[in-house]
Image 1 (cartoon, one colour):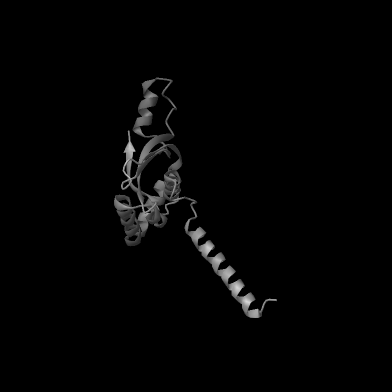
Image 2: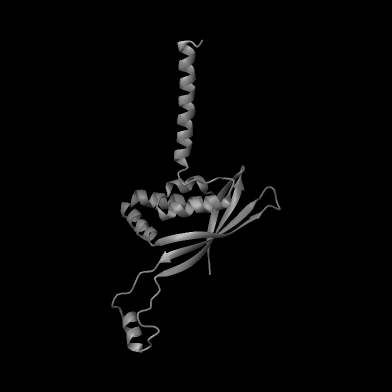
Length: 174
């Protein structure tokens, strides 16, 4: 039937395929597809919420890749910077993709815009002067009512590079 050498070769090949598949899947723990701009932006949002900037290098190019590399360099040079980023990330409550548009009129310059709505936790006032002014105003509709969240809209611009969508810039929308 099979020789010991054949069985060893087959098992070795299966092990190599398994390890390669594991290595590829472990580098894409955010489950995105380079063929789907919305999945890349969703993954980027999760990376930002986790203050996990190294994986962003794989899905960014041009200006956005440069900003990501600067952030990583700042973390390496100043470890307390990561603590500040984690604090900011903890204020990010959730996000939703609200629109995806793909512009393919020019085959050499295919672009996509993915629009996101972020929900951000607002810092609550204690007994500060603004809160005291609300109480002193006498307006019962204002007393005790403070916003706990804000919504921020961000457009992500992506470009197709060798069949892979990559984020090239972001813009906050009013």
